[in-house]
Length: 76
Image (cartoon, helix red, strand yellow):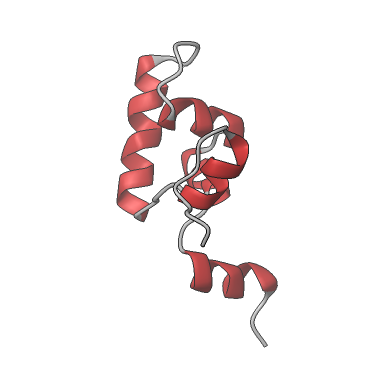
């Protein structure tokens, strides 16, 4: 029987937590790197973005819309 982590990854792809674990940083640091925040070291940002690219990480549009004020969802 697959673990919840395995089945979740199978449905949704690579998560920000996967990138953080592989890069050896916190998920907040990954978020700062992906969102190009100034408070992160450029070398750390480059390493995180390389790991994210290698793993095939893609930000979740729906999660981003829930966290901000703009969405990409249209209701009918």
